[in-house]
Image (cartoon, rainbow, N blue to C red):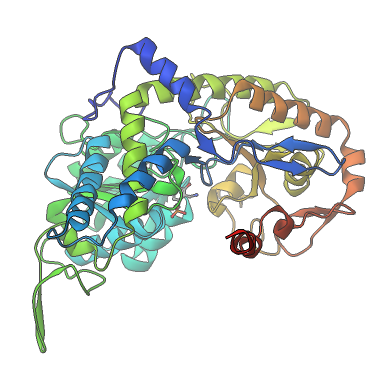
Amino acid sequence: MIGTAPAPQIEPLGSQAEREERLEALRTAFTGLDTEYTLADGSTVSRTYLDSAASNLRLTVADDIVRRALRHYANTHSELHFGAHVTTHLYHRAHQIVNDFVDASDAYTSVFLGSGVTGGLNRMAQVLAERRPERDLVITTLMEHHANDLPHRKHVGEVVHVPLEKDPDGDAGRVDMTALRAAIQEHADRLNYVAVTAASNVTGVINPVHEVARLAHEAGALCVVDAAQSAAHLPLSVQGGDDEAIDVLCMSGHKIYAPGSPGVVVARKDLFEGLEPQAVGGGIVDRVETDRYEITDALPEREEAGTPNLPGAFRLATTLYLLGRIGMDLVEDDERELTQYALERFEAIDGLKIYGSHRLEVADRIGVITFNLDALPHGLVTAALNDYFGVAVRNECFCAQPFVRKLLGRTSTNGDATSDAACSPEAQPGMVRVSFGLYNTKADVDTAADALADIAARPDWYRSRYRPLRDGSGDWVHRNFDFEPARAFSLEKEVDAWLQSA
Ligand code: PMP
């Protein structure tokens, strides 16, 4: 749970029991759960998808609904034929649903841009730098994804990284609020905003974003929240208690069961006032002469030049509305139970080290678990999970190099993460990450845990099957099992097959 429980503007539908039943029905309503692959031992299995922190699978039901909406498809910005009218209305509703999903009042706008949080954070760093150029410093935390760090360096100026709490199990907790308060006081006159992730994509640990917002506001600064990892997993409100409202919130549609949809920024409208949009063109101007143009004051139009990704926006809105109607409280509880189960099963595997506490009561986390096996490199473990068990997980540094370096103990004597080769293109270190979506079950966790136990028990056998790629990625490949992606799926073959049967 992020701070106090938000009052969702999308009312859950039905009784608790009905909602639980619907959540259960939803579990299998995703595309790609039953995709089969032939493994290194010649057997064929349905994959076990445990890579949702990277991108999660698409809701089939939302696809069906969007396909029906697209029967009305036309460009927006006109209401004088039926299709354009319906589409313009749906696009407007899509923005409203996003606002409702995060409990945003009329003081906020939602802007669809780019393909994820990266686009949103880059744009908002520009906006906030231009709004208050005298404030050229941003405070963020050590656990941030590069997307919530580099845009601030590029567009605003200096970035100060606040350390994390040591949790009682020793590794990495949430942002250290005492250190944050001190950093805010030290830099108050230059501080533009505090940018913090709602949940880490490395440890899954959840940050108290509303408390962060209050501290930022006390110093006259703003609060920007990266909700890439939390949006599909936790209830989240931009409101919070007194003076705790989040000023800017960014989400990635492809991490909210809607791959193919845009990124979203939900931000206070006044932040954009008087600022030139980054992109200009059609759809955002009131009047154009050959020597001048007037940009509309209307939001989000001002920030969304050109024809939008309409099917993507509809898919995202459909998915958010569906999640809201089931209730994010249920989604959170469901994932918590699965995460607890997985932590217990993984903890019991000899030689497996989990990063961050394995006890949710000590360090609350979403369904993201990162670990290493003592005996084998992360690239080999990840390849073996895939090749011998059909378990899809991710490895390396998860675009959070300073944090992963720190967790791996690659630190200099003063305690800062060193800039040694760890996680650089030449280096080998990294971790393995398992992450959950609504479709994952205890059976998936069992499959992964049994596989890991087998790999941990027979490291020499697995090592003999693989060779390091030595391309700097830390990846390993099987010595004599080749997977040919084009044999799994080819766009050209699909087209030709259709043409031949037409
Ligand atoms: N922030 C976090 C915490 C993330 O996990 C990610 C994606 N891994 C991003 C930002 C960037 O999101 P996107 O790739 O959708 O722009």
